[in-house]
Image (cartoon, rainbow over all chains, first blue to last red; front, side):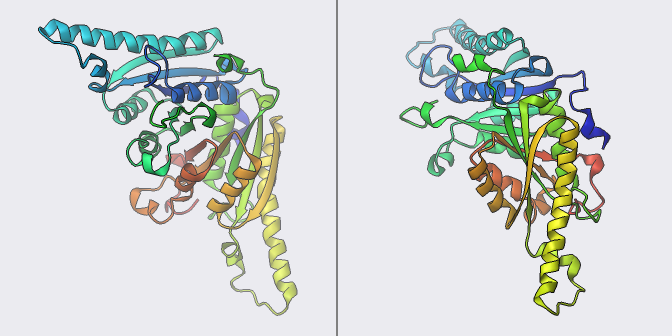
Length: 183
Length: 183
């Protein structure tokens, strides 16, 4: 059983990919409750005091149309107006990633963070295939059976389709907002 | 974000429950390929050099009837014969757990191991509720879609029904036996 006795002997850190997104309720660049819970869980239960043993990979997937919601009242008069909208979206995403990169940096944990656009479940699958993390951590709103039919399917899809081990972290009950759809 | 900065400050180790079972192909007390893969993954990717930060909880669920298979040719003439069969089963289970406890001990990782009887998915759910580990690691044979309909459902059931985060570790391709049902 040579493999069992090699714990900790590898030079390469364990690479943990964490899917992160913005809060739907708190306005400008706050991470969602689920993303923050997934991040905190990873730090407290896995990384612990062994900062050198891990590298965190933060992937933020922006959903193209949903992000334009704040611009519903805008008037688009020229192609430049769309350009500025895309710019704003990008900046929001960068601010979100800044939260995670700064916290990791403070704790002395190596990290990388990047943004992709598209359908979260498909994009996460593609990125896992490309980046090959050792483990994927995703947050989940932990909704009831009725709501899960409509919204709680990203983490279930990933568990089935992604090649690496997946951990789904549910939101803590005491952090859930009044409307469980909010996050 | 007080919680994000508390990584590693907790005294209590992260408690990882690992579901383990016997090999279906290798005879006397060998762990299954899936169980060994789940154990090795936990050591190499999570525990690493931080032995003091983790406690491993090995749960072996014995399926009542299946374990009697080796005694198909036996003749039962008195209640004592059944007693001796139960005794044999118990000893096989203890030998299985010995493998995991000895390896953990060699690496200086705290552990506990115990045996329960019943339907693995139901028993694991009950034990998680009672013991409240931080994370549950289970092996999986990683079968194709056709075979999964019949046999690959324990880990999927656990992901849905267990309260703590669940990691499913698939068997490595190079360790798979000719018949993917074997383990």
